[in-house]
Image (cartoon, rainbow, N blue to C red; front, top):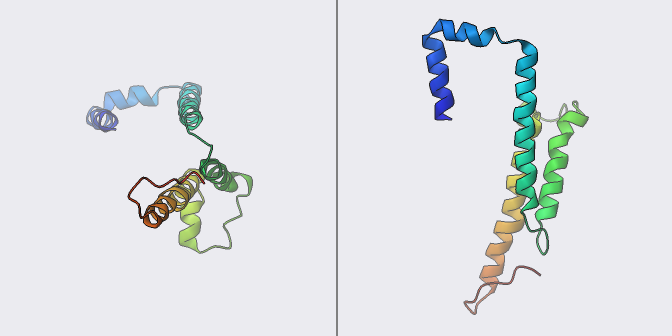
Length: 130
């Protein structure tokens, strides 16, 4: 992140470097974008493959988050009836999927873990795999 900011500052201070970047053909930038976003998607899939899905709600969290993130792509008018502030946040598939994943993870994993620990009076770790 810092390196990207530094590169942008250098490009801003030296207009000739900015002209070189602006001279890149659009197909080259498109190809770089495909590789970039493909790499991000592959990294996400690799991360999801390492998650344990048995005995917890992780499968529900992943599936609902992907579905919520797909809504703006599949039905662009889905959030038209919602308040403007809500539609602004959830109109992007990335932000809506991220918010859904965080909220569901808090609800299913963190709150469930807290409730299981509060019920356990023996002091041993709570069994939350039920």
